[in-house]
Amino acid sequence: MTSPAAIYNCDESGFPLNNKPASKILAQKGSPTVVSQTCVERGENVTVVACTNAVGNYIPPFVIFKGKRYHKEYKDGFPNGTEVIMTESGWINEEAFVKWLHHFQKFRVAGRCLIVLDGHSSHKSIQALEFCEKNLISIICLPSHTTHRLQPLDRSFFKPLKTFYNETCNKFVQQHGGERKITKFNFGGIFRIAWSQAATSRIAESGFASTGIYPLNKDAVQNHEYLPSSACEQVSMPEEIAVKTQTETVPAHVPRSEDLVQGTSGAVLEPLNSPGTVCFPSPSRPKTSFHDLLLTPVKKVQKRKRTARKQTAKLLTSPDFIVETKSRKLGKNRNETVEHNKPGQNKQQWNNTCTKRKIGRRSDDDYHRSSCKSADEENDTACCFCNLKYSDPRSIAKGDWIQCQKGKEWYHELCVGAEGKKSFVCGRCFT
Image 1 (tube, rainbow, N blue to C red):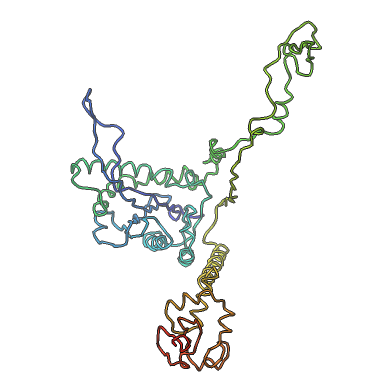
Image 2: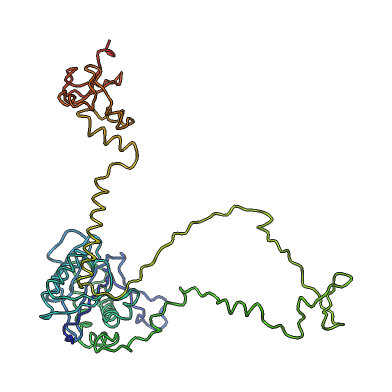
């Protein structure tokens, strides 16, 4: 049985560089206006990767700032052991997750350990899986749309952490009267206060217990908690209910349509079963609709069929999954290489590629004028001076080709003495 100290849960969440005003503000009774200080800017998002085990020991935070230039002052104020990196988007990616694994390796318990996390694409790179396989780290990926119920950090940790963070941000803004903003340089000191209040062993243990991971409890999550939201579910009426609704019994005092007979005046219907009772007909309605009488054009929208991939729980560090990921990545790289080496998609780009490859030094205007020629025409082109075709092996000794700007005829540069010239007019056109 795996020790609870070797069972970890990893997840990331975003923290904005601004304060969220409190929902309740203390003010004097009867005050006409109640105000609260807040930041004007929306603020960048800072990603924090948190990790804890089932006994309540936390890995130091792993912080991701948005940008390219890294400053040493960004690490000021953070808890001891915190790692700070930069990405262009400010979110985690494959490279950042590999860096987090090296950070995790420094503080985790010795021996084989288990990490429970969500199925984000950054967790499935070949570099990350090879690192985990080499360092005795097993990774279990949770099924799709279940992390809100099966991930311990989502159940017990991130909500109090963000609550304490917002409170600390509000105090920071009130103390400085709006003169100082929350930036990357002072984010560490604000985040440290919130982290020290939320990163307790009791919160971590309650998260693992509520999800049933440790202690192992299969009944911790009920079946109805996996059901999709009723607002997103399209309920269709079963055929049995639809047939029953159509053949529903009619009360005795309401005459059926098949029992009514038209009278002599055409305005009164008399039921056959109960003579003497008069029933007035309902207003007549046309069977054909207005759109059938007056045809109007209807725009047809072609709906794309999207096949949703349902992700199940997987052991990402298993040998089969690693081999599958490597083969998929290898096939993708091959396709990228083929697409990169593939010539132009349209005919004009293809002709330009062939012309530039087969013909030597010529001006840009010559390339543009020769773009309309096909590859076969270029192979059959003959020098108007020596009559050697381009495809003739003896033509290579003549050097590069050059085109007359007026007559559009082709010549060897050695035949007409035009070595290195950008423009050329043959003797026929010159006279």
